[in-house]
Image 1: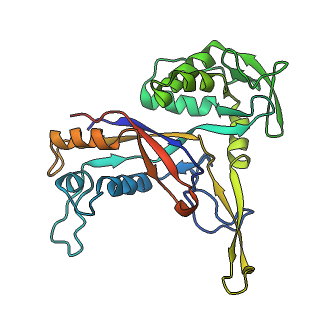
Image 2: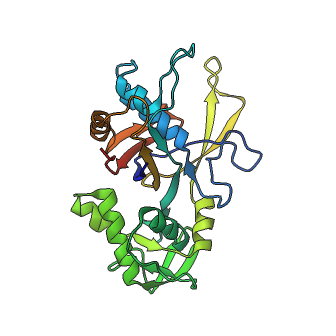
Length: 286
């Protein structure tokens, strides 16, 4: 069983909630326990993919082979061929004093990403408090970047340029204008800075519920929700078990055709436009 990679690019805010919280935010997003970085659960992605491929509302042979049958009485039960991991945060868009927005990552994340995707690109140095940027970056002024309230010294880095080029080709494929724009706003920040911004620079919105009879806010109906901002990028891995029951080469062909570069709706608040995500999948093995 070989694993392929996939990427999620958020087109609008994405709220995959962890339920109620006793913290400042009433409805926070799900985070990895060890790193406290945002994730999208593999179960969420798997369920959305199943719904996307079941457009007619019926269980086709493709659905059964990939995800297993949905037999309520247990008369037909077996494990589907698809296995998918959680999606981990790769790039976070943050407010920048120069250039409006920056797409940031850090050496810790790039190390994990490089290992999982087996990329040949070298990692930037980790023993520095400086940000590293690619050529002709629009977020830099006087050798500094200012993200949210943080003022960070920045240096030009060839390895940052290599990473900017690699990631832009994966995310934007043949859109040369988008590739150039991304590379001009790509910055590698220190691990501690990224951890701080991943906790404080997410989207926080206050919501209310209006009483239809009185036209004013219901008592106690005031809460805050956290979301990943639009243009966040996450990555994960998936596999299709060739030995799974009912699986065939034709199913891999159909999956590659229907699942790659599609726009999906994930998480909550679909009614207000949240959760639109582009799925970019490496072609499954046939």
